Length: 186
Length: 73
Image (tube, rainbow over all chains, first blue to last red):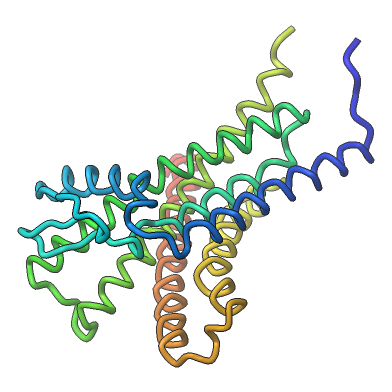
């Protein structure tokens, strides 16, 4: 016989898993906010690959600096690693839907999935942002009256925020489908 | 949850997390005393407002089209 969780046990489980998401986000922030290029290799290397593929320019690793493209005059430094976006995306997905999951196992799985999706999204979105920024810079395009720095910042905000909206909508659709499926099975 | 509530949540939840990460966290870490932070913050809020307007406009247009197609117009 399947045990139906009581309201109080659900509240406790929700609070515990919320605390787990917040603790992971905090740990990531503490660990990587002052990390160097070598420690951030797990994000910088794939981001450089994506940015290189999208901009058709080669990024070369430089120890202690990050990834450099001489043709685009662009450096993917630790500050551009996208760790903040990773933390924001993970927290948004984790905290946004963990309470909807019916069991402790599904909540734990959702948190793991949120981490994996946030990581993949960080690589793709940050790679695209860097490629677009580098191309804009290489073309000498400035969105007057914005300075190149301000244009770069504006591009980053627009890309990151749009990506968060898209991620949230996809996650919502996925969660709805997942929660509807058990009702259909006889 | 109604459709309007869901849309509202789908806009506000990511926006809240984005602002918390880009503005809230630096403020908690004491960046509020720096002038560059506020310049950066103002730019973030301005661009986010433009994105928000674009998104709401997109939804308004798509729901307008849906209503027209339901009426057969």
